[in-house]
Amino acid sequence: MKALLTAAANGGRALGWGLADLILPGVCVACGAAEASAELLCDHCNVRLLSLVALPYCVRCGATIGPNIPIHDEGCWACPTPLPRFVRAVRLGPYTGPLRMAVRDLKYRHHDAMRRRLGDLLASAVAAQCSQETFDMAVPVPAHWLRRLSRGCDHASRLARAVAGPLGAPVGHELLRIRSTPQQTRMSRSRRIANVRGAFAARDPKTLAGASVLLIDDVTTTGATANETAKVLLAAGALRVTLAVVAKAEPPTAYAEHLGR
Ligand SMILES: [Zn+2]
Ligand SMILES: [Zn+2]
Image (tube, rainbow, N blue to C red; front, side, top):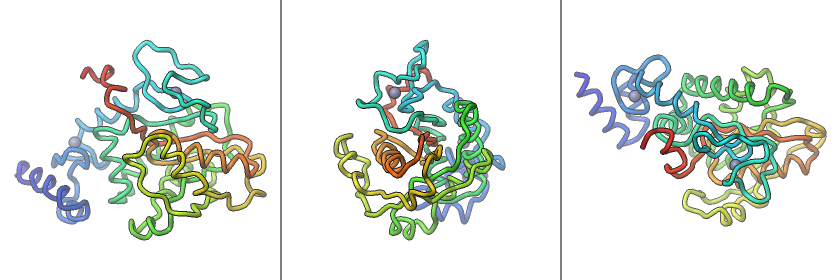
């Protein structure tokens, strides 16, 4: 029966997330095992998720850094030049394994339990990394309205609420996406920078004046979108922008040494 459920879960994933949801509640969203807990991951994937969360990373760009390499406020060798406009990057882990599947669950299946889980974990990471900071608002990086429509939910706002809630910060929808941008998956960094330039605007500079903003996104790759949105917030009067992101997409070589691969 277990093998049947696992095979069906894998088949459901191949066909589409919705089908797997409908016929197999309770399977692990990462590996398809039939004994997922209330947190939607099996014990094995939960342990793997927490091992990704524990990896050391650069506090300026969010890239995983090697074992025994000190973490500097000034950044790492992989940081872009010039440094990002946000003062700090807090992330959960690299976009791989169970964390990648968890982010996909956030985007496409909208499980409240997964959003709460990742929201709580990211809020704890922000509280630990930014213990001296009081955030005036948490601002999601908005998707274009057409993408929100096609997904059937405002995933960015829901994620922002899940992170901001435990931190006691209000969510402010202060960023507007004023034009749609092509998917960036296969773009170089320079093309991504050009792709997002001018794609965002601030809703109301009066609200942002002097504010410490926690910018929230699900995945960052080169940081081009986070940097562009931070630039818009700062130009509108925000005092400081901190990035909180669930996952950093990076080459497997960035974290292979930690995972013994
Ligand atoms: Zn699993
Ligand atoms: Zn860095």
